[in-house]
Image (tube, rainbow, N blue to C red; front, side):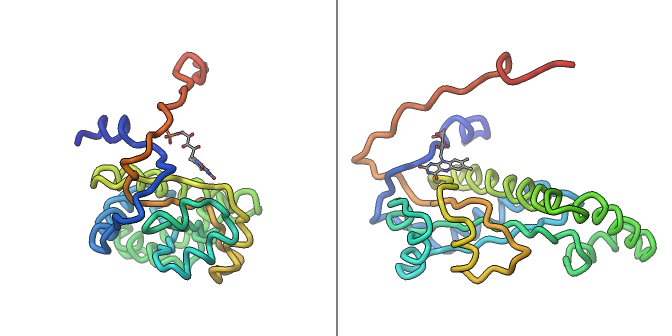
Length: 204
Ligand SMILES: Cc1cc2nc3c(=O)[nH]c(=O)nc-3n(C[C@H](O)[C@H](O)[C@H](O)COP(=O)(O)O)c2cc1C
């Protein structure tokens, strides 16, 4: 499947085949491909909770009452880290190597990241959500490339989900992505209208 076909064929699947799973190995392949997504300073301020068990799905469904969560074999909770720029992020160690082990340069870069993302709640949220949003999109395209369908959801009690899954206060739930396979007995709505270049681009 070409990348163009992946874009054209990906749809939000409302009806999951409850008898068709996504094996653990395949889920790993999807995530390990999707993490090639870009992120600010390559900080990858994200994490993912894969809700697979019946009990987990019921817990999630309480805060996001969409039947897809109970029907899809797995729903991912995409989590952004609002303080993922701080020194505890292990990816800084990789940056240190790129900087030839120069700790002063690393401290300068860390200071820059803090200045950009750490100085207001709004910037922290933008940092977490923009990066985790790119991961989310990458997951959906990666899934499609492996023949797995998806459905993004933000219709939920975000704070309720955060607390239910014991995420710290510096974490923010960005969206859910149900993964699985279309129930072939159901018909999807036709692809909905998209606003194109002439409507959304302002050239300056
Ligand atoms: C961030 C985000 C949140 C969404 N939230 C929901 C949701 O809560 N429930 C739902 O049924 N669909 C949800 N959708 C799916 C959209 O309705 C769908 O992507 C859109 O109608 C376009 O259809 P397509 O994905 O099949 O091209 C969401 C999509 C995105 C990207």
